[in-house]
Amino acid sequence: MRALALLLLPLAACSDLPPPSIPADSAALAGPPPSLVPLDDVLGAADRPIRAASVGAELDARVARVKARAPQAPRNADLVRRAVRLQRRLPPLPPESDLAARGERLRARADALRAAPL
Image (cartoon, rainbow, N blue to C red):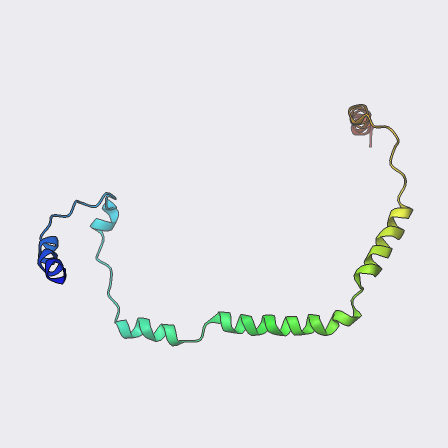
């Protein structure tokens, strides 16, 4: 089986490949070729510290500050009590259920206010 694969490998290298289906940009072909950079510079850039490490440290510090303040923050029950108190202070909703009529009255009132002299 391996011998067959080794015999077919040179045949695959001799085959004609179809042209690329994506046409090359004429401006790219007319311009200068790309400059090559030494591989050592590219690999050396990977060893430099990245900004994400410092951002991670900042986020860890913020998490620690929030967790330190957590006992001082209002609890869920306190927030629910506040919401109930605020709802009691709100005026009741109008009893009418015909939204179209109410919208028409509001539009007429808005037109009257727009037409009022200042």
